[in-house]
Length: 148
Image (cartoon, rainbow, N blue to C red; front, top):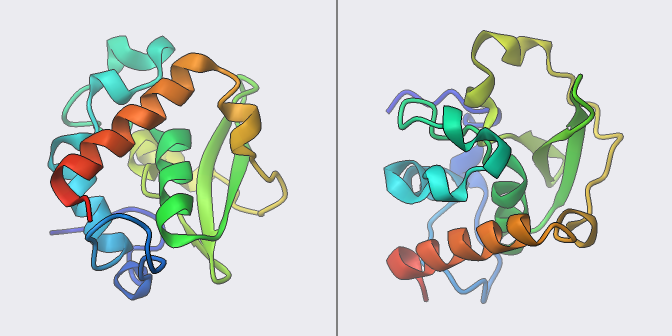
């Protein structure tokens, strides 16, 4: 597979935390599982669902994916402030940046600045019940195919 997400070069070296609850070999393995049908319109942000397609499966999936990655692999979640005022979330694990959902931006991805200056907290994001429910759905779908 031709991987295009930020950090794909070292993602196979990122191993799950012991006792994470999932049977995964690496962060790269998680990407493969998510891309194999776990990212879907029902896990996409509601305001973006009308534009979600299988060809752009990472669209509207950033925060729930980033917090799921944090659950499994540790690290921190940061955000890039977008022109509309929302944040695009990504992960920093062992000092390296990973953005499994960067492909949603297409050619505009090159304009994203990953400077690790906007920490994102699940307590803030999950105040939105719909977002928390989408996160729980993504976790449940992953448990269904890779639960320990």
